Length: 345
Ligand code: NAD
Image (cartoon, rainbow, N blue to C red; front, side):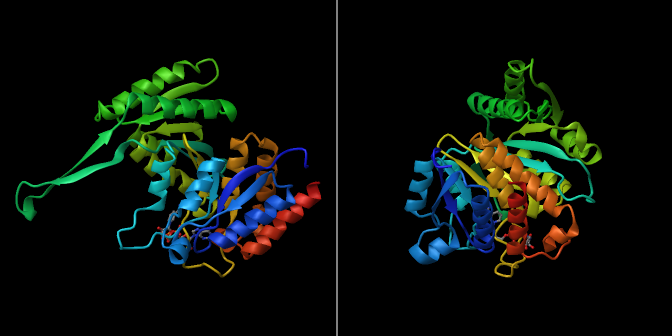
């Protein structure tokens, strides 16, 4: 449809399995009448080898211009003192919210009918990096310390994001996860602020709170009681991996990083060098990340069509890649999705 302008998106193929899974995303979106205009740029190990920088300026400029990026996994070189590209992106674009939905897609797993979303504060808390050793004596008596920082403004911003997300996505409940019984200042401030924010949504969204340790247990015993969860940086980091584990692991888990300067969508998994170039990679996580991006831009039908095609394709073993118990190759899986899109038209 040429009457609508396409939405420009920085597309980063990345390293390892990145180019193979990005290729499937491009082909599937073409088959759906792509609403996005891909602006392809490099980052990661391949960018370092070509131009001497893990995160080239041209890539940063593109993300800043478009305000939107879909990113394949990047290999972080070990040693050499390289700063993580993900941390640089987080700081540069003030990516304050990390959103990780987890939904049961492949039947027969550990849990059926899981559908929950973790919203993690991404810039504050114990990950601000104020860490050091205290020089008070010999090595046997070494002391290390870290400072966590939560602010009223940062807590309000993430809580507001979580409640707005709940409203936009027809969710019913937000659970505020904290440790305010022990970290009374650091997470007490977060809890108190998030509750205040919640009161503004009282007619639309129910909310409650859980202490993080009890929450971790409840996620195993009865995950169906949860809907949207919101937490500070460290707890959110740990719980979001736990939640990915509830629904069958890395090949199926997308993530969104929402910021002031841009929003960046990606798969949770890394570049999987052990299977790169063999047609074994599962592109579902990156496809689901692209669906989140479509939703973020209000393109709900495209997101729904894509999810429906994925659900129907992996419903039988003939439509599954090796990591989820099938034999289909990366590109053949893409073909199956495209066939389904065409059948629907
Ligand atoms: P990984 O996620 O790349 O791989 C872990 C295991 O899961 C491997 O056995 C891999 O084959 C498998 N796997 C991952 N994604 C898969 C998929 N889509 N389909 C099928 N199997 C899949 O984690 P790792 O091995 O610890 O890290 C490899 C590299 O990726 C490292 O350089 C790391 O720094 C980087 N990394 C990048 C990101 C990112 O860019 N967001 C995230 C995590 C790791």
